[in-house]
Amino acid sequence: MINAVIIDDEQNNIEGLQSLLGQFCPSVTICGTATNAKDGITCIKEESPQLVFLDIEMPFGNAFTLLEKLMPVDFEVIFVTAFEQYALKAIKYVALDYILKPVNIDELRAAVEKMIKKVKERDYNRQIAALIENLKPDNKHIQKIGLHTLDGIQFEDMNKIIRMEAEGRYTKVFFQNKTHLIACRQIKDFEDMLPDTIFFRIHNSHIININFLKKYFKGRGGYVEMSDGTTLQVSTRKKDLFLEKFIH
Image (cartoon, rainbow, N blue to C red; front, side, top):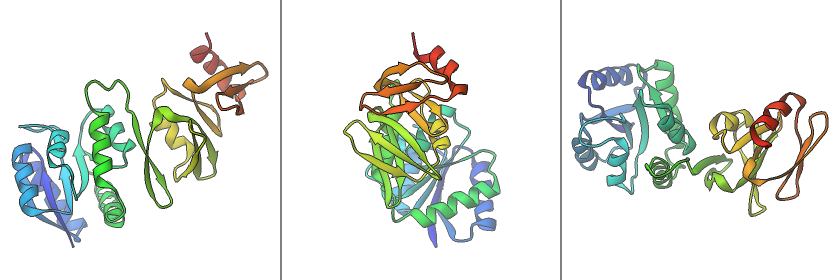
């Protein structure tokens, strides 16, 4: 059994989620609830849950200030929220889970099952520290990204990623220091996740960081040379958008 706490500023949301968990996730036991961040911190300290279902906006501080005050944490977090897209992208970058309100039963089941499988292998403290750093007001761009590998999650500064190359269901990620890793995500996932002000998918198989772009060579689609000397083809259908956006 997994001991869990629900923190949400609406009591009816707490009762609704508790009911759904009782019906569809019998392996989860609710050992405490709270309707604001202050009481949430007390509840977590008293109950020591393995899992916290956490709303983002609430009285006496939001979810991120709550987590920051509890660092280092030893529990899993599933956000249950209707919060703005920026925060959801930040959560996704550091490999935490979220469910959008109103709660979908299939999404709830999937998030809980995923948590049970990964509860022992996730590095909670690094995830949440990266999330808090990403959401600081003076950060113009999210800096950290959690890359799923075969043996865990590796956290990297996305500004040090030179390029990404598709390898079937996986993606090879190349870094400024001439190292690389294999990430357990398709390249399309990274295209959706990464900021388009920095990264551009020039081909079905390639995403580049334009900060490392050295030269563009003309041709039907043309090709680019990166700062590490790699040359990559630009697809014909991407050429015009690429030139319009990045070549001045």
